[in-house]
Amino acid sequence: MSGGYTRELVEQLLPAVWDSGYAYGMANPYAPDPDMPTATVDPAHGNTLYAHLADIRTAWRHTPLAESERRALFLRYTLDWPQKRIARHEGVAESTVSERLTGTVGRLVDQLRCG
Image (cartoon, rainbow, N blue to C red; front, top):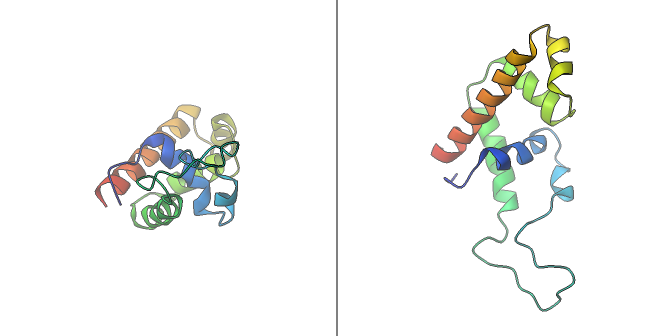
């Protein structure tokens, strides 16, 4: 695991924890433009997607999270529920859901950066 993980990248990768086919729909920002057949991939950035997917799954298993935090992440990043719906489902305030999501994503980022 490396220090290149950001909150945005982790949020993009989270659905892959539960959906093994999720990566098939992800675009590689370092891939050559399809309209440019002579373009090449930057080898310094190429082929990191599978490493990221393995890392996010490892972080999910090893980061200490409460069941309510794991459930909030699942509902938000897999089912794409808005925070208000999650709050109703969990019987908590929307601010509690926001804190859970912010805190748990932050801890996953820390886990990925520190290993």
